[in-house]
Length: 456
Image (cartoon, rainbow, N blue to C red; front, side, top):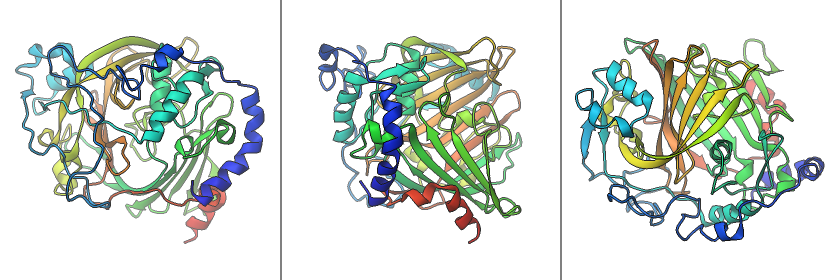
């Protein structure tokens, strides 16, 4: 663990002990079930075997080393560059494939004649470091939902519920999945009009994923799972805006803490509205705060129902979309991103239905999440308005960042079917690659850090 991280852990430990004592770990799944991890199940809980038709292969470890010739810092080379599409789904052959498509993808194909889905051979590329596999076995024995499912106790570092029994457990696996330890990225986002116009917003994002830090303990973790800081670099009218978030695990017990710095006002202030259905940062109203990373934050406003597992065509291994041979103008087109650069594969996904609870409010009455069994990443989400009509479709175009290794979206796209617009986040084709394993200190994620950066 980095020196700064150790300092932050020690600082949190004393306060955390009381919280943990009030939420003792309970036994998770049985010893017999845990023994399945690494046998008929992968170390993270997916079915190791392929499907009966052979169209989904056996998981054999995923990508365990970078392709030959890759150097850290390069854009990630496509390990499957030689693959050709098996077929392409469009409006003309949609009826042949409906049973393996989300409602949102069906509607996109029906609505946009220019949209299509090239389907490639399935590559089960997902992998994680061995310590995450070990921690998952430990977490599975002790993890529990606490405070009516608004928090997780007993788990640290690993996937808490690799053999899930509820929709809420699947969503917590997504929220606590491995995304590295610390990272700094330059990324772009764009709210694209119906005609294809957009202003690119360029930001530097720094993140410490405390839940996954090596050597982290439940006592030291306390209730803070992620530290996040964003600085807008362009366009000039937004440059210098800063956002700081301390992401809590149980956000009902202790709300997410957020602060913003505006260079015009030259002061730091609390930002209590960075949650739920408040507008997402610099998204032109096309994404809510809880749509970042497909879903994040508080789980208390929805009923979460596990609808089982399905074989579906989902975005996967999006190395072509990630490539530095593309410009942003090659990716961002009217109505949707250019399908020429997309890749869909047949994968097994957990299906979770989120239905708004009586007496609560949210822009979205209902959401269906399709969660990758191999990585616990949400790959697709169908989102309904309060008239119960399909409104938006979200896609997480993931790759394996094989120098770690981990699975994370290289681009997230939220399509507003009613407005004919979409919001793309994570654009990196024209920017340097993310830097991992940075030596952040506790001072880097404080309101004081925003003041210092704002004066530079």
